[in-house]
Image 1 (tube, rainbow, N blue to C red):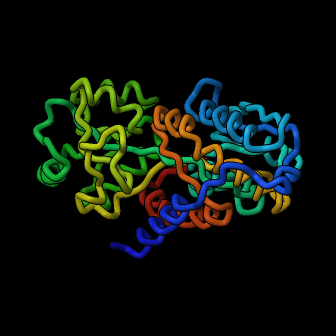
Image 2: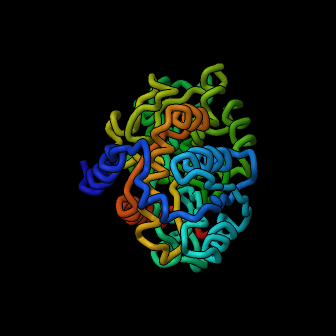
Length: 330
């Protein structure tokens, strides 16, 4: 097992073990403004928006009576518009950003000039949750297991391809990661969205497809595709019979998407501590846990320092993969 993988797993394990607080001390409550917002770089009604609204409701309950937290959607430019809105906000706890992996990590590796630096323009509050990706094959594919599929790829290198919803997406990079792990140069077939990719996967036009669990589960359950393995560190609670790449021995093909919460740079430490505690209280709520799982997201917590360490580890993990892909967003 590689030292980098051990380090990443230790960071996540430490984050998950963080104790949850049912209430916040009075001194902490005073550090957060009565009016605040969570900025989301996605449209209302989507998965990230729903997560932000859940957090807003439960974090509000953990803070002072009368505290209001709204959700503000700032869509476009691969999340940069949302980051710019955060950077333009006062550094007093009145603005937070719900960011997917692309914002603090992938943007820094795929853009020559991303226009912001998470290390200097944003302050970490804490982890929110992880979401899994998986590999699926057409229903009539001869490989019934991931081990059989790897053997098939090696024996049929002229047919070794994979589909992803778009170039520069995490499924694109998972395909590069898997190819490096198994020693097969898999050809990337990029689509303009998940729906056309899944249509071709069901029809057998591509050898396999990669996407989030939440997008694949129903097609898998109805027999229209067959999920062979997950890229996550542990099996999904919604697909407990599907093994992970890690347990199958592909230790260098492991990763997840994730959401985290950020504040503007130079937000006072006491305010960050209060927001982190309120976030972790919200994530400990049974209703929030259940609803997060419905969106395909598994709750994960951390300290602010733990989130930044994890971000830096993820940068180093994805850097060689993205370099090998040759992808540039600009």
